[in-house]
Length: 103
Image 1 (cartoon, rainbow, N blue to C red):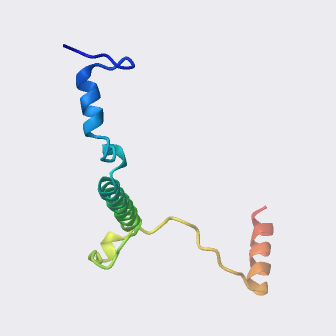
Image 2: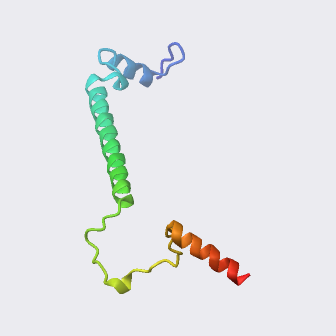
């Protein structure tokens, strides 16, 4: 025989009466504390992981030339730029005179 009180069946009513003295599972202090500590640990791990990634990225961008061997003179390419020199007044006059003779 089932008794229906305020829309609840007998089994549900018994469960509610049995659990009346205890706190709900969601409001359990120990569980909340453990969850909070777990969240803090997870945040700390994520932060360390991000820092590690950033550090690795920074180190990757650095160029360390100390470990490379220096090549001989054949290893370097010399650019083909014109070397600019300053001419003295006498040299300028001679150059101008030579230009006049060519024309």
